[in-house]
Image 1 (cartoon, rainbow, N blue to C red):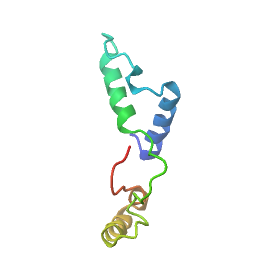
Image 2 (cartoon, rainbow, N blue to C red):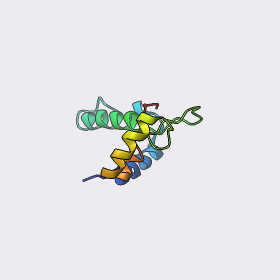
Image 3 (cartoon, rainbow, N blue to C red):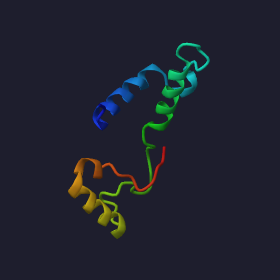
Image 4 (cartoon, rainbow, N blue to C red):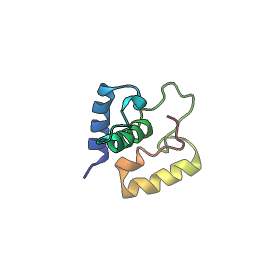
Length: 90
């Protein structure tokens, strides 16, 4: 079973192979379907955009709603709560 830590480790290793998600050969008769899965993972779990002018995490947002949700979530699982995003920007 993958935890967020091991998943992120394996994804960072995939970054070494190619920066282009479409590089994988989806037309291959034997490995094409796995290449399609690889493309989805590569595009869906890319790194965050640098230089944002706003806070995108629930933790430390300063907004009463997001702080309230974060406090409740942190009681259940602080590690996951610390990584909750208020929006998706990739």
